[in-house]
Amino acid sequence: MAKKKTNGKKTAATGKRRAQGKRRVREESCWWALPVSCLMILILAVTAFLAVHEISENRRFRIMRAAVESDGFYSGIIVEGYALTDVTLDTALKHWEERIEPAYADRTVTLTYNGQTWSKTCRELGYSSNYREVLGNAWSRARSGTLEQRYRSLRQIGSAQERYEITRTLYDEAQLRAWTDGIAASLTVDPVNAQVTGFDVDTRKFTFASSAVGYSVDADALYRQASAALNGGGATVQVAVNTVEPTKDSSDVNGRFGMITQAVTNASSSNKNRLTNLRLACAALNGYCIQPGETFSFNQVVGQRTAKRGYKKATVYQSGELAEDIGGGVCQVSTTLWNAAMKANCEIVERSEHSRTVAYVDKGKDATVSWPGQDMKFKNTSSSPMYLVCYVSDNKRVYCEVYGELFPNGRYITIEAKTTQTVKPDDPVYTYNPLLGSGQEVVVSEARKGYRAEAYRVYHSADGSEIKRVLLCKSYYKPARAQIEYG
Image 1 (cartoon, helix red, strand yellow):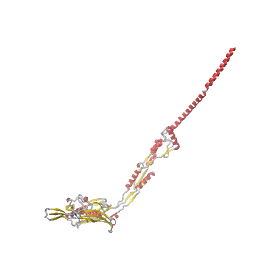
Image 2 (cartoon, rainbow, N blue to C red):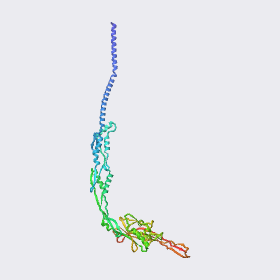
Image 3 (cartoon, rainbow, N blue to C red):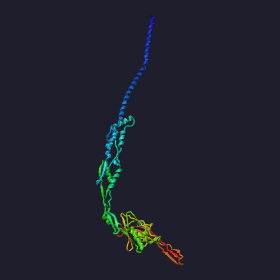
């Protein structure tokens, strides 16, 4: 019995120990249970959050993608006042091409005058528009970058609105100016003054053409009117054509033409052959017309002096000595004509003095010619044609007359010359001639003095008062030594 009691106590003690051990085990096993639970809860919470966030992000992605994937213009895009939300680019381009641009490109300006019309559209005058570029740029807005960037730009457009304007050039100014200038030129007609149309050598009378009014258009004003018409939407412009009166009518010119001047030289010492040459040269010149600005050439008009043409042998100067040649004496005609032309205020182009002085004109006032070398040329510097009348009178005088527009207020010109220097010849040249007797001398050619001379063009008023004088030319006639032969 006592033994069993002992065992009972052991059993109780053992059970107590076991219970305490289990309690320790439970206590030891619970120290990590709370953190694990918290971790599990956190994991579950994060998982739930991520799931919700993923759902939200997926929804946001779908919203952004749906917003930016529109084929039309985004909301807030306004082009020239047109809100283009959801309108496709092709539709917008077609609308501008068919409905808007023609209102500018087809603007028309019409110019009219006296039943005539001229029309041009802006399209024909270089019209240009950047509507395609502007619409393309507006449509491309917010269509590049990441989805986030595009969506953010799209939101900005929607809240602020973006406005685009199209730039147009209605016409090219140079093209419009060329067109209006061409029309102005086509309607411009210069007035025609009454003018000389001919001259009758026998009657010494002029024939005239009547005057006619002209017309002019202010090209600058026409361009400005056409430009304003196009800028204002197109219009019709009446072209203003102004009448321009001529400055000279028939009554003005009839009394303003006649013989400007004449020059006369004496040919009474000429023999038959020389007179024939003078008359032939005058006949070639008679009635010749020198137009304004034209240069007259004696050799060209008179031509080569040949026997075939009727010219005879007569005295000429060759290297300062007398000789006989075909056409001798023609220099008197060229000299006489030169003096007449200078008194008609023509311009010297070519003139040469003789190798020695001549008897029919003052020193410094001669003009020699030869074929084909020396020529006598002058230029008609007036605004009217000049006609020549040249002849040899019955009393053997050479006349050269110039007909044309008279000098105003009765003014006239004379040619005056003066000898500025007399040059003595050197000592004679002696040449032995065995045919001569001892001490015998023969003068082959006399010594001849030389001269320097000047010619002046003198301008006079109608009462003879000198207005001015101008040096016309200078001349030099070489002296010659006497040529003597001795035996």
